[in-house]
Image 1 (tube, chains in turn yellow, purple):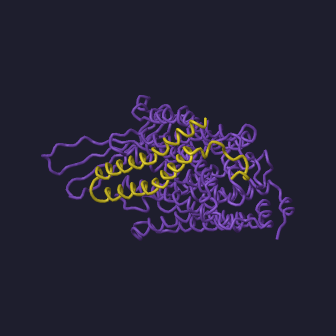
Image 2: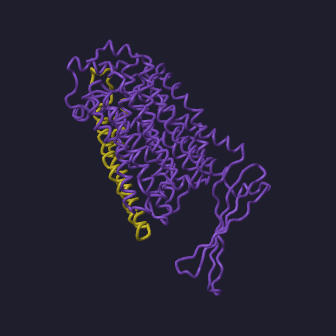
Length: 83
Length: 511
C-alpha cells in the first residue's frame, strides 16, 4: 500500500497543473463563445472566480502529492503525540 | 473560572441540544437564500436578465460558501485562543443579523445594482459566520462526549445542516401557501429572512447558559493553549499534511455528495424538469424527513466499525447511481410522454399581448393548465409573434411547459430516489465530525478541522449548483452534463480516501 501511496503522489503532483490548465482552456473557450455585452461580462466574472478559487486548491493537491511521494503518509499518526 | 467538575455536571443532552439548536438556526439562515434563488434573482436583477439572473444569484449564493474557509480561519483561531463557547456565540449574532438585513434590502427596481451588491456583502458575512460556527459546535460536543460514543453524539450536530434545510423549505412553503404565490414573489419572500432574528434570539439565550468545553477548560488551566493556532496548524508539516488529507480524502467528496443530494436534486427538478415550485420542495421535504434518522445511525455505527468505509461507501454509491437517477428524473417528468394519457380538463386560456421594441410586432402568450386522467397537471405556454408586416412569413409558435405536478406513483418514486441521495448524504456526513475531531489535537482542533471542512463543503460542495448549472448551459451539453462535476470530485476523493486514510483513528480527544 505504501508503494501505491507514493506512486499516486506523482499523479496528484501532475494533476494539479493539469486541472489549472484545463480550467484556463475552458474559460478562454466559453468566454470567447459568450455573446457581447452583459453575457460576456458575466461569463468572464464567473470563470475568474472559479479559477481564483481552484488555483490554491490545486496547489494544495500538488503539496499533498509531494508529501505522498516523500512517504509522509506511509504511517499516519495514531495519537496527537505523534503530530 | 469554571472547573472541569462544573463542566462535567452539565449533561451531554443539554450540550447537544444547545449546540444543535444554534447550528440548526445558522444552517436555516444560510439555506433560505438558496431555496429562494429564483425569486431573489428576479428581485435583485433587471427583469430582462433571464437565465443570467439565476446564474448571478447562484453566484451570490456560492459566494457565501466560498468565504466559509476564511470564516473557519478567523473564528477557528479565536476558538482555539479564547474558547469554543464565546466564539460560536459571536458567529450566531453575525449570522442572525446579516440574515435579518437581507430581508430588508430593497429590490433592483428601487435601488438598482446597489441591491445585489448589498446582498452580496451580507451573504459574505453569513458565510464567514457559518465558517466559524460548525467547527465550534462539533468540537464542543465531541469534547464533551465519552470515547466510543463520539460518532453517536456528534451525529446530532450533523443532523442540523439537513434539518436547517428542512426548516427553511418548510417555512418557505408555509409562507407561500399562506400568502399566495403573487404576494410571496412580491414581498412575502422576505418573511423567512426576517423570522431568523427571533430564532437566533432564542438560541443566544440558551447558549449563554452553557459552560466552556471541559477539554478546553483543562487546557487553559494547564496553560497549554496555543499562542498561534494558525501557524501551528498550517506551518507545522505534521499537522498540515493531515489538513490536506482530511480535505482531499474526505471533506471534498463529502461536500459534493451533500450538495448534490440536497440542493442540486431540488434545483434540477425545479429548473430542468420544470416541476411546480411546491412539488419540488415537498419531494425534498419528504426525502429529508425519512433520511434524517440515518445521520445518527451511521454516526453511531461508525463508533463500532470505523468512520472511513461508511463515508467512502456513500461516495461510491453516488458515483455509480447519480446519472441513472437523474436520467429517470428527466424521463419521468417528460410532458410529451404525459400527453399520451387521456386529457381530463383544460383551463380557460389566459392570453396576454406584449409589444416588441419596434412597437409594431407583438408577442401573444397563451397559457392553459391541463389536467390529465392520471392526476398530473402542467401549464402549457404558447408564444406567437404577430407581425404587422403581412409579407413576413408567420413564425411557428413556441410551446413550453411549466409548473408540472406528477401522478402519485411517479411522485413517490422520485421521493424514493431523492431519499436515496439523502441517505448517501447521511453516510458521508454522519461520521465526519467525529472523524475530523479525532484527526487533530485540542490546541489547534477548532482551526485545523474547520478549514478542510469548509473548503470541502463551502467550495467543492457549495459550488455544485452553480458549476453544474453552468456546465449544463454549455453549447452541446445535455441536462446530465452538470453531474460530471460532483461525480469527478467524489471519484477523486474516494481514491485518495481509500488509499491514504486509516480506518482506525485517534479516539482520545483530550490530548
